[in-house]
Figure 1 (spheres, helix red, strand yellow):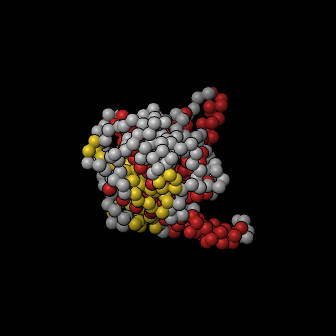
Figure 2: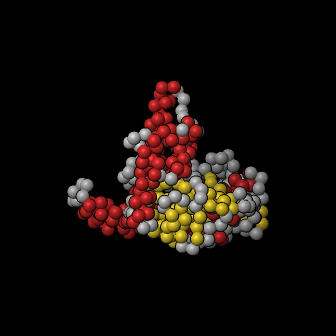
Figure 3: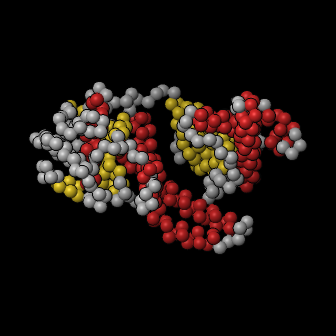
Length: 408
């Protein structure tokens, strides 16, 4: 079975906004109550509370004075909150996520409807008192709807993430087709090499820089407003809208570029970048965070999986920039300010980024060949050749003919 999700814009009426706000508040309060109860129980007994044990508190709370307002919330919304909390605990103990945190009404709000949601032309039908909400359904929803998550952005916009289940499986992963290497950067967001000498460079749009002056102006006005006033809340939404435009423009660019690359290639090779460590550089942290390299890699991964393609990640310590793609000679040092260099062994003049993309592609083909998978490139099979040993104790693959193997 396949699971597909789409995110649609909702346009609730004022009455529906009040009902959704009530659901947001109930779900948030129940999450914090259940999390606190789980923490206290673990301190006293050394055991945590499961999903059934937490749901057992709900009937009593709905009848208790002071919390009887929980009964006005759709019951399955609260049960979905319990499921999400127990899942968060499992992810924490498995080392996949950090410890669950308490939720605040000042952050993004969301509730989940696990069933009984359906769609029609321009409408999403929710169970309970919420009813039909006008929506912008930009594409047809395939399969049966499983879960719908309604969220309220800080800018005041409502969205619904609709998860559906479709029969069938993704195509079997294949490496028969074009192989492309991608070197991610800041001046040029992506430098691609298809192995035939063609290098394509995609400029970095610098999304945040385009809106930085507008954001600064609105933040200065926000800082002058009195805390708790209606005007301050108004300007908080204006600032959030600017951030929303930055995020939307970035997502649009990453989706379009990843779709173009996936449509034209069967295998994509990228570097496994340690972004968390790279943003510790105070001079580059802002630019690296704005680029969105991690999101771009994730988009490539799921789109290739749906197509039946393959994403190959090479080791982050592989010297793609320092290695000559012609003779495999590796230079000792290559500072970031040097964008072009000449190989002292064979005399080939390299553009730093283009050379890195070529080496990344060759290393990706070598990894696939090592795994025992046949690769078609340049119209024929690629055979590993002798040369400098890489960090993975294998030599990268040379694609060009009539090469000279350097002795190091």
